[in-house]
Image 1 (cartoon, rainbow, N blue to C red):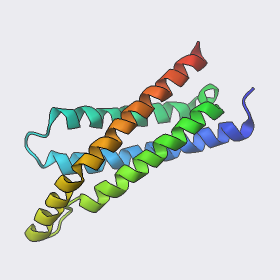
Image 2 (image 1 turned 135 degrees about the vertical axis):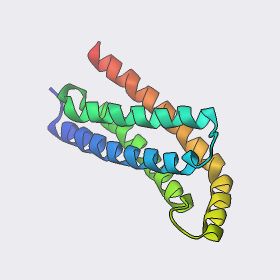
Image 3 (image 1 turned 60 degrees about the vertical axis):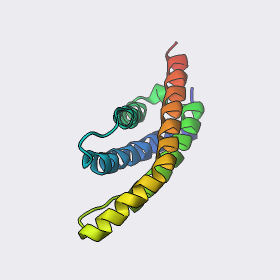
Length: 138
């Protein structure tokens, strides 16, 4: 039987991660959705964030998946999505004037490398989480 604190921690981390993932998806969609032909790679990475949110929801609802190992991975994922969310909030154009939107777009391009690094990290963490879940189910 799993440690009750691990179960509670995993459930809470899963809920927080799902929340962060939703925010990241919204911000990425807003940021790259304004570009008519957003790179296919960005769309793929956005799909990874959406999948991570789905997995987080599953973990939150399934007690057998709420282990200390899953909790540790979820905490790492949460940190990465929070970092990504902060960057995306800082570069999102919102409903500002044309000059401010232009400056925000330039800022987004400047931070694009960091955004891509964080999205890659999320994809790797999602894969690690899937592997851990597979081991639990086996």
